[in-house]
Length: 185
View 1 (cartoon, rainbow, N blue to C red):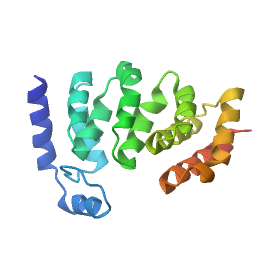
View 2 (cartoon, helix red, strand yellow):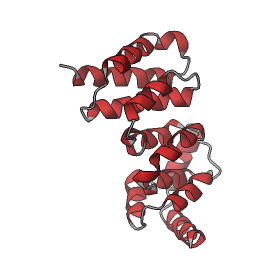
View 3 (tube, rainbow, N blue to C red):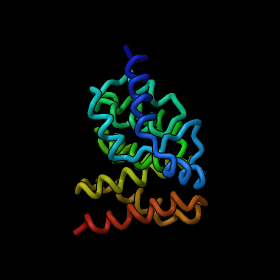
View 4 (cartoon, rainbow, N blue to C red):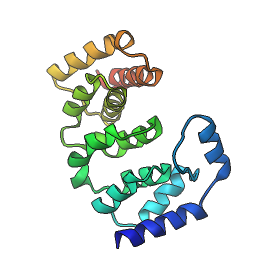
């Protein structure tokens, strides 16, 4: 049953393939085993044709195919978020995937703020990136931090350029600070 769904999804991806987008992404360093170049709105449309299913999402995630990873995020049921979150951060190859993972899954965790604070303190860049992006999504939705979390967040953000070399992580930290400032009275 899962194999059949995966075949059906890959068939739809081949039909929706956009070689120009795929080529541009490859030229920008997004080196997947396969990149169909399918645009996000179209991927979301494909996802609506399938029920959310943890096993299907896990199976899609395993493929080193850009669109399969994105569809895995869109098809993961909410009750599976806590058990999958950190494993998928570890396996996230590029910030495009991380951006969708943080918006759809990580910012919806029951303890998202607590987890995000842990992640920004992690020495691994993708965890740090996901932590700041998760906080950005929380702040955008008007979800704040408790006093202890806030102190830790601000301390980490203040020293971001001292501890981080990756520009994407630094920009994610600055982005979260901008939304933090918007959410504060």
